[in-house]
Image (cartoon, rainbow, N blue to C red):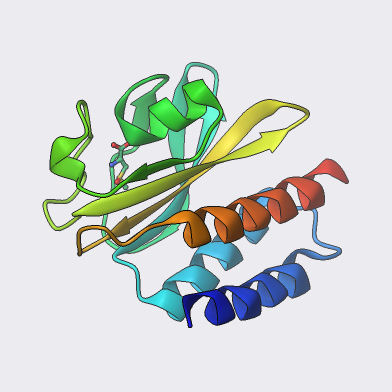
Length: 152
Ligand code: SME
């Protein structure tokens, strides 16, 4: 069920990113596609700008603007260059609560030439929302974004 939805979502992401090199435009459409398909609480990108992650295109309520390397779930994913799944945000030391509604979270790095250029952050109103399936497909989406950007 979730996998089927992700397959459709990946096709949509391919369709909108193919031939478009503007990373902001692509990020904006990717957040809209994921938000619409799954009804997540918050879907957005943070872009690496010097020592900070800076808020980029997103869908959902107002969020924190800047996150330092190594801070929160987003900063941890950036530092480790790895996807981080948090089943219960209350149990993640240093979790940055942009919204009290968020209960679980996944953060996927966007890598270009081995460097993190951004992270994709998704928050859910429920605990234990994200698993290996989300990781696999969101990493694929992250690669599609990085590939489109590589042509710019
Ligand atoms: N919870 C994130 C901060 C970003 S918001 O969830 C949109 C974190 O701990 O990095």
